[in-house]
Length: 323
Ligand code: AMP
Image (cartoon, rainbow, N blue to C red):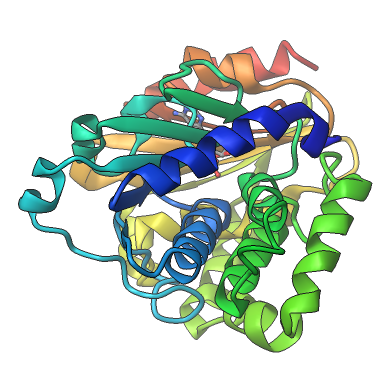
């Protein structure tokens, strides 16, 4: 996608707004993934480096696996920071209900950068490209557009690269095009060593992870019409010593099964009395079914929620109807 032509005017408006505010807070979605963290931190460190006189913050929950290895601890911000005028930049988040930290509501001005369908254009400026591989690709492109004046620090290159790799399944998905490689290639010119800086911390496994992998292979079901899935109940998570955030870690084990166009995992979130569903497909558009089950997302990668396992046969039936 030719981003420069599409968003030239908006990019300039964003720079103007950045210059206008002394305080900038970068937000992203709840239950963050690589793209959410990668975009948020890549942008925050570029802002810190480019505008050293400004106060730049990044907020949201930490992650049980990524924080401390690939990404730093999130900042814990006092309420008083949000009482003065500030610019909120919200990345990778389609709708306001999913923004991690409600204090974005106090912002004087909101900029949205995203690659999900623009179901809620909540920003004063909305830069949304839903056919793009990742929000990291979009925001890296934005920062690189001003590289002569504001060069990218190595840390930003690392974070953006991790987001692109995470949301493309290592450059595997259909959303990858020549521009994805162009942006990723340009990130490498800032001294990034992907195998050490990104892949090692990203793919390092603990033993619990291997036990989870065995569980998935042992318990995976495939319906007659070709929906593959596994269910992780709270008792399984406890037995495996795995946080529910990691339930979808082995979703991709089901991604290339012959005769299986749709696959998903269902993870119990005991503290919320719900089951988080991650759905993937090769080609079929699963996003509408995800919407029906309190979720949303992309054509081939969506998330949903069910409130009891009794709903699961209905969800499977709805997905089977797509086949
Ligand atoms: P997940 O299965 O949680 O990895 O989500 C897959 C994709 O769908 C990601 O891009 C999410 O950001 C998106 N997604 C997940 N849940 C929702 C939701 N409730 N509304 C909109 N998009 C979602």
